[in-house]
Length: 106
Image (tube, rainbow, N blue to C red; front, side, top):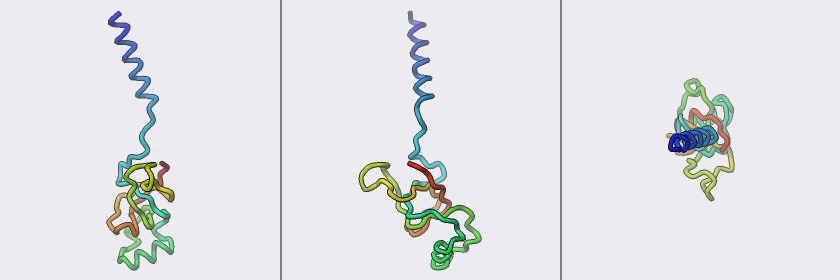
């Protein structure tokens, strides 16, 4: 009886682990940002901002988020993202631009 209970428990835990979806609110490469848009570093809007900030666009190869703010709690009132959520590696320009962005769905 002990063996059957242990086997059933192990099977239930394995099934639960397989059926549990991965969390989409995690970003392995940076923080989740809510950006008004995510564009190529060579777009005219991004190029204009880069020129103002003194960023060499040739050094940027990944997508760029424009007007970004951090997403801290997904789906909770004012912290939810109604624009383009993105996983960005560098947001050191105070939300004006975020570098190394990958669009994600929440």
